[in-house]
Length: 185
Image (cartoon, rainbow, N blue to C red; front, side, top):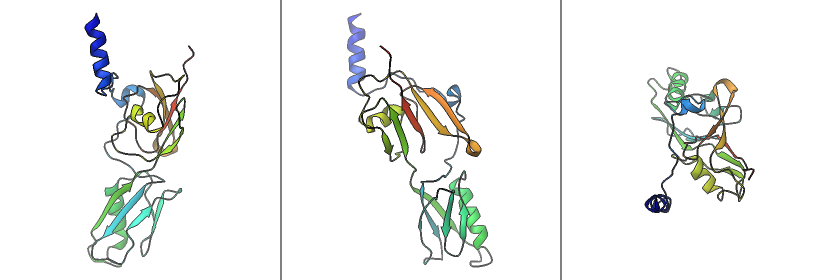
């Protein structure tokens, strides 16, 4: 029995999470194969053979980027490849015979941590974050925090919202809102 306690302490000491990572479908989330853009993201758009065009754009609250010559481009809910094709389509024939466009995400939209944490607020997203790591960025759990699970609110398709309870090892995405509830004991 004692070796189990030593093993548990060793696992915690080296930073391994005791939580299993479950598939998103188990928690009501659909797996998305590609990242889609939304308000708050910052992108770099390069149009080859058009060095004078601006390159860095922040996606507006309405889900658009406004480019010189091209105008407003709706990017909300689109992948970077879809945006590349849309911009190339607007440039083709009018300005450049065969435009080549590259779109890259420079800065992801922030995520939010609320509830029983030390420093609730908005934080910059870094790929690979889990709920547990997001809480650590927010200063850690408060004294009365429920460590077993957190409520995750995620933007869904067509303006909907998906709410689910997830374990600490669950991966988060840009724009997610994490709420850590208090325990009652």
